[in-house]
Amino acid sequence: MTAPELVIDVHGVTKSFDGRVVVNAIEMQVARGEIYGFLGPNGSGKTTFLRMLCGLLTPDAGHGHCLGYDFRSGSAEIKKHVGYMTQRFSFYEDLSLEENLDFMSRIYGLPNRKTAVRESLDRLGLAGRRTQLAGELSGGWKQRLALAACLIHQPRLLLLDEPTAGVDPKARREFWEEIHVLAAQGLTFLITTHYMDEAERCHRLAYIAYGDLLTRGSPEEVLRHAGLTTWQVRGPQLHDLAEALRGQPGVEQVVAFGTALHVSGRNAAQLRASLESTLTPAHHSEPIESGLEDVFISLMDQAKDKF
Image 1 (tube, rainbow, N blue to C red):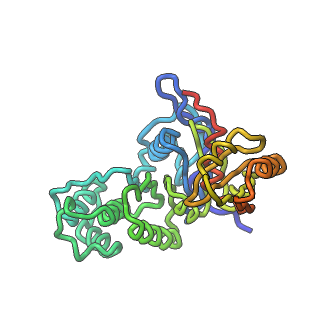
Image 2: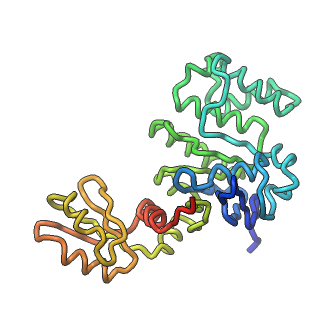
Image 3: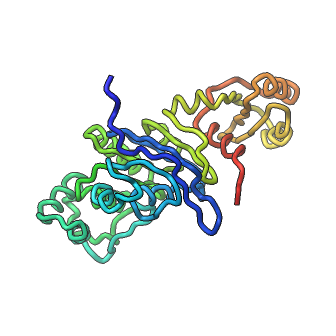
């Protein structure tokens, strides 16, 4: 079998600010056409890593390639082939959609701006709003405009930094459907997100906390490698029960999920014994498959804040 073309292949990527290591020797490989989810709590180093990949920040250490270019010395070339979508809407709200996209086409020095703008509007269903001011758009439509701007120069890699923050569920779903269409056409994505349903829609994931890479792989591999056992508990006085369970042998986390508790740990025997000794006959418990949120909370609890 032919090895996949790697769009991102970097090793030992490190960055410090004022003596604090915010990205610690991160390794990442992302194949062409892959949707790679990059997860972690706020301040974990995700955005710093993205900015180093696209040449907006210079790493302190590390080596490798992005889009075939040395990611440290070839940043000027990398920028030409990367689209970067930030968390905040960063377009001129007193300009129309068409005018904003024309401005972006000027920045990239595109030879046929009118055609590029028209195709970009058509691709994301924005043609009917071409004369509308960007400031009048809802969150979902602003998101589409931002994606259109990222695509206008036909990049090979999109770096999306929490692109659906503050967007309603319907708009988020439509956005991810578009991402999968583009990935099927060969476009590669590295996406940071806090939403577990979005993480499950990625081909592969990496999770970092305090700058350290804690796990990576497909969603199924991440769940399997976590070695986490989870029980669902229902019944009365769940708040009091949660307090009683915390700190018991084998109990690493107790999290409320609606009208139930998810109780998790890596020592299955100890966890079960603690449940049996703590639950009352009024409580119903059953083992369930651990979810990504269970795994990531567990990883976060184990991570150490170096700051």
